[in-house]
Image (cartoon, rainbow, N blue to C red; front, side, top):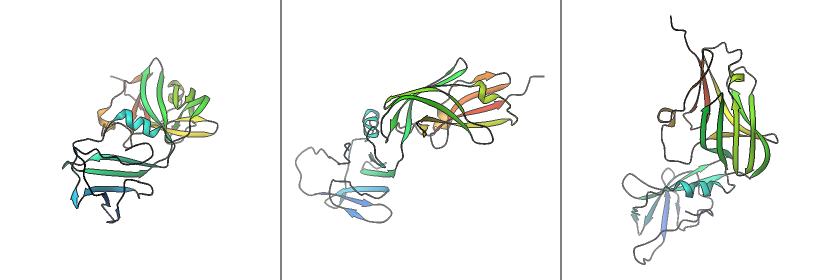
Length: 229
């Protein structure tokens, strides 16, 4: 799969016949390697009426990062199914910041990432934490350098006047009135909410920990810890 959404298949030896793509839900078929206009969903590939076998897992993080570096509103991923055949996953996408590093230490949360599926940007920005209930957003300094993003968020302002035992804040990059969510969606790690654990910091009795949500978005959980008796 290249950046122009053209599917290329390498064969051990030359073969005749075209690759046919069939939409799993609708049964719609396409008979060429130009994937323009494919509807969202899963498409199975076949050749001469048989599922197209492959030994390529279809995953390259560097390739996916490069692919996401092109502005687009639809993502197409080639992958190998559990039975070893080629399939395509098509979904609609919107610009966001793909997280590449998170550091939680020293009273701040630092984030690095890159703009995915959107236009590059230059200049000052903000790393913004948006509370899911009640509170005003909290922001820290950040910068865009083309597709690269770096930001730092102080944690103390999020803990001020906390009355609930737990509160949650979603993280965004913001510049020139445009707010992009932060997430990690290009790697092959599943169940990040359970598997990826960032260090917690504490402000008084409040524990502050970044985490990934069920949709792989980056957020922060604040929990008031009970005092030991």
